[in-house]
Length: 177
Picture 1 (cartoon, helix red, strand yellow):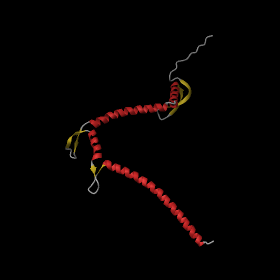
Picture 2 (cartoon, rainbow, N blue to C red):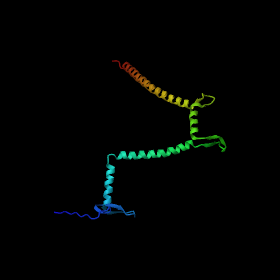
Picture 3 (cartoon, helix red, strand yellow):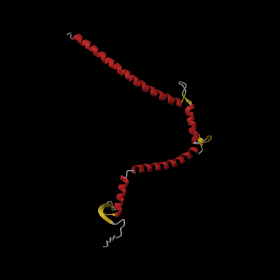
Picture 4 (cartoon, rainbow, N blue to C red):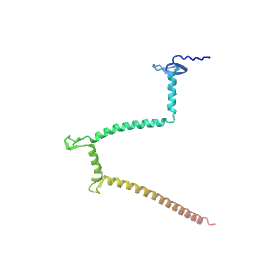
C-alpha cells in the first residue's frame, strides 16, 4: 500500500481559513480571506507579548539604548567642558585669557566655600555657611515644633481637667443635696 500526499505550492499569500479586515488605502476597510502571512504574524505577536521574559528584554533594550545615548552625550559634554573660549565683558572686550567651562566650574565650587557675601549690617558668610545655617535652622525648627505640640497637648489636657473640676464644684454649690 502506498500513500501519497501532494501539496500545492504554498506562499505567504496562500489563503487559509478565516477572514481579516484589510485597509484598502481609501479610508475604507475591506474583509479579505486570511493568508499564511497573517497567521504567522499573529503567532509571532502572541509569542512575543506572552513570553515570560518579554519585560526583561524590553528593559535590556532600553538599558542598551540609554547606554548608547549616554556614551554619545558624554563625548559631547567632555568636548564642551574642555574646549577653551574667551570671556568678554558686556561690550565684547576680552577679559583675561582663555578659559574652559571646567575652569569656571572649579572656580564656582571654590567660591562657594571661600567667598563671603553680606552687607555692612550683618555677618559675612560663604554660600556653604548659608546652606548649613538654613539646614540646621530647618531641623531645629522642626524638632522644636514637635516638642511644642506635645507640651501644648499636655497643657490643653490639664486645662480641660481643671475646668471640668471647677464646673463640677460650682454645680455642686448651686444644687445642694
